[in-house]
Length: 123
Image (cartoon, rainbow, N blue to C red; front, side, top):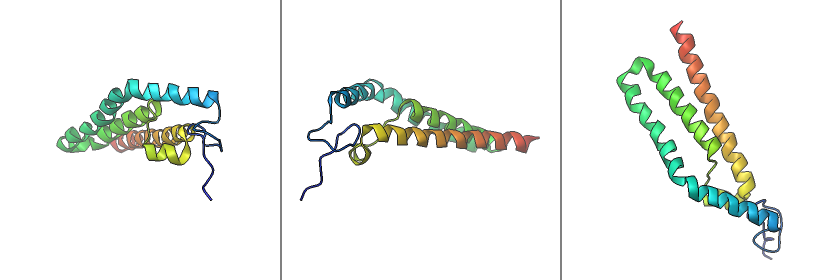
């Protein structure tokens, strides 16, 4: 017996690819968003990693560079919640976006903690 088909957007049981027109329209809208902003996402995700290089040169300020990197990466994932196709097939688009955003909030929070640590260590 095969497992029931699931909607690609909301991951509910459905008879086709999507459970309704609303889910199909939302999935198409999100795919257009991904297509439109994938280049900017890559730039915003790779760019902050380069902040580590000056962090090693100015080692006394490494927490500042780490905090900046984490804040930018977290913000990027919140604004562009793009995930792998495997994640989408496992959870559906809707839940995958939510998971990606929570990961982004976690990274953003870690960046804020690093910034606070730097400020507290300098006093």
